Length: 219
Figure 1 (cartoon, rainbow, N blue to C red):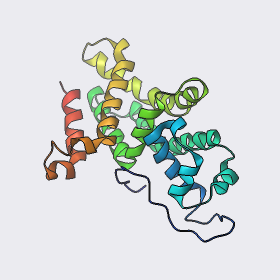
Figure 2: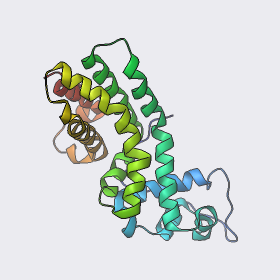
Figure 3: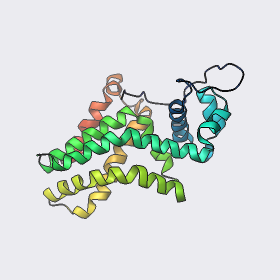
Figure 4: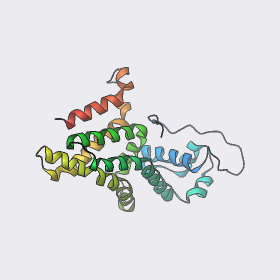
C-alpha cells in the first residue's frame, strides 16, 4: 500500500472521448470508488451525487450505474473498500493480544499501527466524520463493517493498559473512541493547522502526531 496525499478537492475531471463509456484500468471500479470516497467524505451522502462522482472520475454517470446500480450501492461499496484497506490494521492489532509485551507497550504499538494507517489514507478519517451523522441502515453498516472489527481488536488492549494503571477498565470504549477520533481528525483536517505550524512542522507531521499520542498514553 502506498501513501495517499491529503485531499482537499476531488481529482480534476479527465477528458474522455465521445461514445459509450468504457471500463479500463483508469476508469475501473477502484478508481470510481476512490473518487466516490473522497466526495462522500467532503459532502456527505445526501449532498453527493452520482453525476459529481462521474465528473471527478472523467466518465459518464452510466458507467457508475453499470458498476454499482445506485448511489446507495456505491456508498456501501465504498464502505467495503475501506474495510479492505483497514483489514491489515485490524489484523496487526489483533496480533498484539498475544505479543510478549507489557500492556503499555502493546497499546503503544497499536497506536503506531493506527497512525500509519491514518496517514496512508487520510480521507478515510474524513469519511468517518461525515458518516458519523448517518442514521438507520447506513449507520448500522458503518458500525458492523468498519467500527466493530477494529473496536474488538483495540479495546482489549486499552482495557489491559487501563487495568495496569489501576484505572477503570469500564472506560476502555470511551478511551478507544477519544484516542482514535483525535488522531484521525487531526490528520484528516491537517490543513487547518497550516497557519499555526512552521513548514517543517507540517512536513514532519506524522512524527509529531505519533509523539503527541505517545505522550498522552504515557501520562
